Length: 318
Image: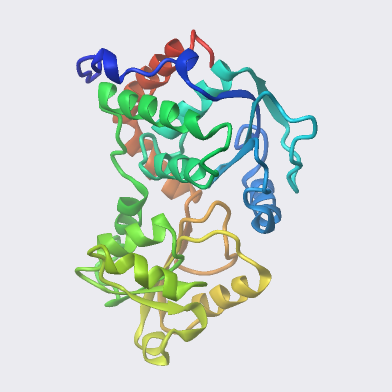
């Protein structure tokens, strides 16, 4: 497996030196629940992101919901709308898990980049005085070091997966409609914006337009109800890369998918948004899973090495 030299001593972070510590974490993920059950949990969490706790950290990715509680733990920890079934106690074990998640060793796509950004964003949302805020630097530095040390990176990341699935046909429409405004939706738009006319449909178009101005993503940002009829009628591929799908939002997505000129649908959401549509591939379609598994093979050894290295940093806690 590819390795690099150990990081300089001054750049190493010891969990004992960190000013914050984790008392315990609780989680639901694909080892505890089905994807459909996780999807229902995500819906419940939409109105309670962060929960206002001054001692807890909420992490939500495509395949997990996790709560990390600070030490000393509060007498009455914040209660999430959905119960979390698995629990890990102690800073070393919980921090080891979180660092391995951030490194991409526990992802469907091994070494994928978005989960690192999601962990970073979870810590960034905490107030400066939050007990767990200092732990973020420890976790993210360790995850970065593990990725570099073992050369862990996705061979087919999510943005590349969308391109691969859309490029399968010999021809495709000029227009690409992407539903979502987060990191994944923006990455897909950036990947394909030079060769397609990309329309990003989101709940908050003004906010997304401001974000895109500072980058080099070529896309037309619209509210999901404002896609021009000329686009609907002239043909388009559809990529779904969003979360928090309310019934009303799902209806809008279904109308896009049922447009007569719609070509392919690539669904990158945690659980399938649509059912019974032709030319529709979800992230967990058998053909897509096979594609991911084949792409993962070169990264398996690196992921194992990175995971073990992080565990050893915390005294062998997994």
